[in-house]
Image 1 (spheres, helix red, strand yellow):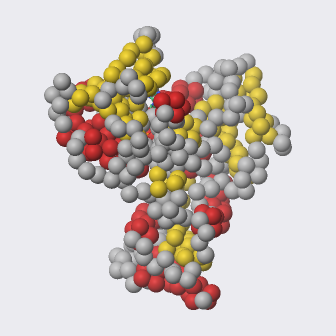
Image 2: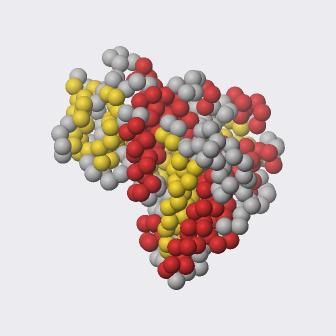
Image 3: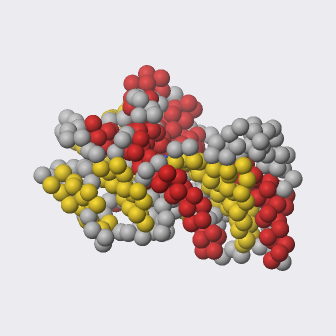
Length: 458
Ligand SMILES: Cc1cc2nc3c(=O)[nH]c(=O)nc-3n(C[C@H](O)[C@H](O)[C@H](O)COP(=O)(O)OP(=O)(O)OC[C@H]3O[C@@H](n4cnc5c(N)ncnc54)[C@H](O)[C@@H]3O)c2cc1C
């Protein structure tokens, strides 16, 4: 009889695991059933802000593979609109509620992949009977917001609570749709994924497109009128709102896993080994936003919920379930985003992470341009490097600038991944032509500056 693989969660991590397992084992050897409580499989949550803004016109452009494709091309059965409500590791069975038809289904398994993603943090006060308050994690969340924005009465005033990258991207999307947008952030600055000095550049760009930023201000409640949200409550008084988007971060979606006995780590994510196996539970795997992973620079466990990791981890789990051998080596925290044309990239540790990990370090900021100064379209580019003292090893990097800024972070990510020192980086053979870089690339200029800073402190 074929072995049975059950997948909980039908997006990036879960379906990557299912597809990779299928590539290595045919239907006579392995039956694969995936449970997804939403309406979609294998979608790009990362694309939601661009669908909300209208840059991506159609919702279905965000869907890589639908359940019919999984069935026809991969022989993977997807139970859409089925929410797994219990996992019994003793009986090797999951229980799921059919959200569309009602009733309960039970499915036995030999192998389980838990890939239930993350949950937007939603404080107790963030509930309104008639609606208007949205967390963002799944395409269903995005669809619910789109419906609200398209519905009557048309929302005109938006408040985004929290200025992480999702809050920033959603604020931009709402401005582009023509709403007035307030972004309220409890910290001193939005865009906490980079250091404060770099975040200030992002905040300027946000103000430049009309987003009103209120920092150092905590939201303590919501007001409603006729069951719809009408304002967010702050110490400085209410801010009117017809729609509220929560950008307060996410936490691993682990309730079911915890109840079933899967071990959680210090970050609250599920613990796995490098092959994405859950330790101590044979046949149980986990991947994606619900797990914690190793930060290769700090050596600490981290919860870094990003699509790039979710897909890789799912793939690793699937290869191993399929009988192959693959490992996930951890992360270094590389991420990119943008505010209109201003691009933001980061990798490795911020100053506060480096300090928390116990490193001694120098940090430098180098101002340069994306192209030769005389070439049309030359714009400023700011590169920040954080290097260990006295070794000179690169610990972290951030870039803010116009075109060609964000993906330059990949050069720095590769240097960091390979343990390069800033001294070694000064000689890197990077491409140069006036339309793409000054003769000294901004990365090289920053590396030279870091070398000087290290020399000055030795
Ligand atoms: C607005 C936004 C922008 C983003 N931009 C980027 C970006 O630019 N780059 C980047 O790398 N990452 C980005 N991300 C993060 C990225 O989308 C996630 O890291 C990725 O989707 C995680 O994949 P996953 O499969 O682990 O979890 P999810 O995508 O959350 O999928 C988990 C699935 O499990 C389902 N599920 C949960 N519980 C159950 C249950 N009990 N039963 C059945 N099904 C269940 C959920 O409905 C969901 O579909 C963004 C996220 C958002 C929200």
